[in-house]
Image 1 (cartoon, rainbow, N blue to C red):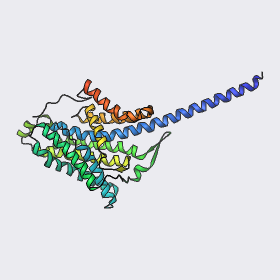
Image 2 (tube, one colour):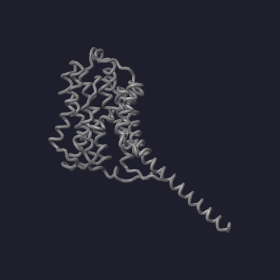
Image 3 (spheres, helix red, strand yellow):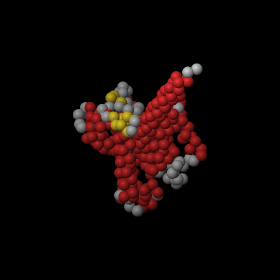
Amino acid sequence: MNLSLSLPISQSCLNRFDRVQKEWISMSLEIFIQQLTNGISLGSLYALIAIGYTMVYGILRLINFAHSDIFMVGAYFAFFLIAVFQLPWLVSAFLAIALTACVGMTIDRIAYRPVRNAPRISALITAVGVSFFLENLGLVTVGARPKPFKRPDLMARVIRIGPAAISGVSIWVPILSIGLVAILLYVIYRTKLGMAMRSVATDIDTTRLMGVNVDTVISYTFAIGSALAAAGGIMWACKYPQINPLMGIYPGWKAFTAAVIGGIGNITGAMIGGFLIGLIEIMAVALFPALSGYRDGMIFGLLLVFLLVRPTGILGETLKEKV
């Protein structure tokens, strides 16, 4: 047997194996970075919507089921301002957020304020009714056919992070979301309005006796929550560039799940829950592709686990019921 021929062949096989191994590691790292970025991006959107749920619940002990449809309304406002009125994208986004905040205040004034002192089931049924009204209004006025949503060039370009090529929208969405949450935290903890909101959340009757216009504070709470939902809807439309009147249903339910897991009534908890849900949804599919059809089931299964083991959520506390 000629050993001089077997050695080069063995060395060649080893070199090829090393090269394949390095390529596999590089490809795995690239996929991991891409999926991690996607998970953080998706989680930041869930967090924005979850904050709206948790703000209203913290003050009124009401689950505003119409919040997910406010998310849809914000996206449609931006769509029409861009496509019909031909306004610049950034101007359209700001106007859409402002208009959606007004819609939130209007819903509170027309639908929720009249049942403020009614039995709690009345407010819950009202919230469900408002949700169905907004969805069907959208179906009647704009139609069920999905519409393409234009996103700015900044979010359309590809950004390289190490070996991974990341879409700009996956980078900008978390940055903008964190910026919006930082502004919200400043309002809540550094302004008189925020002080009034925290006071109403603690004891609504005592706050009213101190001369605070509670209805105005609640109205501003709906406005802020709706503005965050609109921002989330616009960024969701940038990430998944088409919109329809039912687009808020699944994101809304997952954001509600995030609010419960994080601790409903706690803004920081809602943020943590949103990022956790987003990362689980993306990474579970990336690591276990065969389970991709069960990802919604995993999320809602996690909700059931928290309700059984820790119903107050990660950072939540037992809140006094308002009667």
